[in-house]
Each structure stands twice: as C-alpha cells, then as structure tokens.
Amino acid sequence: MSSQDIELILSRQLSEYLAVPMALIDHDGKMVYYNEAAGFILGKHFDEDGEIDLRDWGGRFFNHEGFTESTDLHEIPFFKVLSVRHLVQGEYYMRNFEEINQKLMIVCVPLVGLSQRELGALIFINLVNRL
Amino acid sequence: MRLRFWGTRGSLPTFNSDTQVYGGNTSCLSVENEGELIILDAGSGIKPLADSELVKSIREFHILITHMHFDHIQGLGFFTPFFNSECRVNIYGPASNSEELFKILTKYLSPPLFPVRIRDFKADLQFHALPRRSLRTSHLSINASFVCHPGPTLGFRISDDTHSFCYIPDHEVALGVPAFPKSAEWTSGYELAAGCDVLIHDAQYDTEQYPAKTGWGHSTYDQAIKFAELCKVRQLYLFHHDPMHSDLKLEEMLARHKDEARNTTVSLAREGDCIDLPV
Image 1 (cartoon, rainbow over the protein chains, first blue to last red):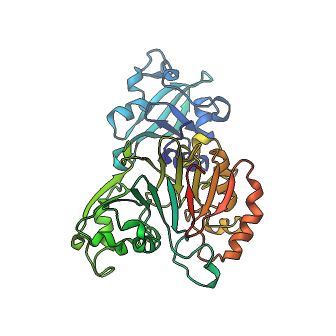
Image 2 (image 1 turned 90 degrees about the vertical axis):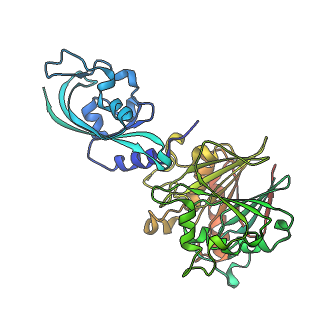
Image 3 (image 1 turned 135 degrees about the vertical axis):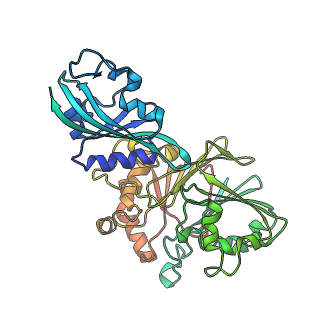
C-alpha cells in the first residue's frame, strides 16, 4: 500500500482539528478526506462512507438554483482547480448525497509542494443556505 | 551491504562519561556496498568517518542529507575528500521553495560561520535537490520522500536487489494523531519503511517527555515501535538519542518499551556498530 504525500497527511491532521468545513482532493481529483463539518454539508461522513470518486459528483452540481441544468464535470470547482492550477472560488448549487439542494460558497486552493509537485487541492466549503 | 553508525546522537554532540556506550556524535551513517560508499547525513559523526580507512580508496562519494538542521550538516566542513581534487562528491538534500541546495549550504560553509568557502573546496561538487522520481548509484536504488518534521525533511529507503533499509532520523510520526497509529495510508513515512529489513528511526523522547515537546519534530520510543510494527519492519534501531539521555537512561527506556514490539526486533543504535544486510 502506498501512503499519501506528507503535505496531504498534515493537511488532514489540521482539518481534523477544525470546525471549518474542509476537504482534500488528491492529484487525480479524488476527495480523499473531508472533515466532520464538511461531511454535514456533503451529506456523507468520511468514517462511514470514505473517499469520494470523481464520477460521484456527476449530476450533483447545477448552474442555477432551479437545480435543473447540471454543471459540466470539468466546471465543478473540485476539478477545475486541478486544471487551472490557481485558486478557484465562487457560489455553487449542489445537491448533496442526502438529496438536499444547497447554495454553497466554495474556495479551492491548489496544493503545490516543493519542487512544484502537484498534490491536489484544499477545499473550504461554506453553506450559504439550503433551498 | 554494510551499514555503520558514525553518529547516533540527536540535536547536539554530547561527549561525557554518560555517553560512552552509545556515542556522542550527531547523525551520520555509512553504507558500503560493492565498492560504493553512501553517507547518510553529515553530523559530527562524519569526521571520524572521514578519518577512517573506509574513505581512503574511494574517489566518488554520495552524501544524502535528510534536512538542514545543524546536527545533520555540522560535520560537512570536516569531510576531508572535499579538499582532494581527485574526488567527486554528490550532495543530495531536500528541495526548497526559496533557495537552491547549494546556497543553503553556503550559508553555513562560509565566513563568519566557517572559515573556508565551498568554492574553495578542491573536489568536484555536484548538488542534487530531492525528491525526484528515482535515484540510482551503480548498485543501489534510493527512494526519498518528505516526512513530518519542521522544515523540508527527507527520509530515505536504500535497496539492493533483495534487501532494503530505511533511514528516518528526524520524524514526528504521531504529530496530531492522538490514537497513533491510524491507517498506513495516512501515516507519514509509511511508504518508505513498509516491509524493509532494517529501519533506523527517530526515538528522541520518552513517552512522558512528549507532551511538552510536541511539534519539535521527534518521536518517542513507543511511537517508533508502533510505526515499525505498522510497517512490518524486521529490525528497528532507535536513533537520534536525546543529548540529555545517558547510556543508562537509554537502556532503561529500551527495557521498558521493548516488549511493545511483537514482530520487530528493537535495538539501540550505537556509534561504531555495523549492520550487515541481510541481517
């Protein structure tokens, strides 16, 4: 078994101590950890449900609060941050894994290690309101 | 492959009547294999290595530096092959965001901290920032990864065709993990150490010392043993002895914690000792 890079390990350890909703994405776009506060928003609990794959986000983000037109996968902030390689932030409409529609403020910070190693991203999620 | 401890002490060279058994020099190991010599860290232990017969017939050296804390580089200026124009010395160390490896080492190896400048060294010096995808000498492969310690810090795994050992001298493996260990995937250094024959690992503190020194970058005896067990290591050498710990204290701590290992043999790293692989 391989282990995560130290930057991700330390980020997870920090996030476990925070009440701020925070998640970690690896360089492939897999959400490899989300803390308890983020789990409440996502509608999943990491200890029970584990990692979230790229394909699991399909149909969960929407372009408008009508929740009718789903967002293209590559425009979802968790993945956009990996391609643009700079900070991505904005308001997003997400139907969580408990099928609750929500408006979220999401900030994604690319995690670039020493020697420009691309490790993934730190994700901060704020629940604006539930719709 | 033969490993030899030239310095096992952490933080500060410590020479007194209480450190005669396990030694007072700071981190340095040599790896001899089929005429090659790899040196791990350049603490004060590199001085007796440089004075030994071991280096006399060798003209190309590889010095792998885990990190730039002083106890791991303070002997560098006393490595005599630097002053031999027939020698080539490859120096490997952790990459930095701000400065090249050469410039970082120059801060120490230049006045006013040191009387001789790197540029006055006679040997052919080559500097290499790590980690990179793979590193090979003629007969050995070397993997380097960052591990948990203040500032960029590497651990190394060195392997021949059949055996491997891992060197993580400064490692706070349980930082922020109250119920250590958690899963292997989320444990610093796991991939480096997994399944190796010999692990040489930080064990600076006793359990009751740790709460006051959390975040200083080091592990306790019990944490090092749990890490070795998690990694399914055959033999663990406790390393980077605290300068405040006497020989008797080290032996007392080992006696208290040794039985916590179920599948791993646990020993104290002792200056001058050799380990031959396979063990």
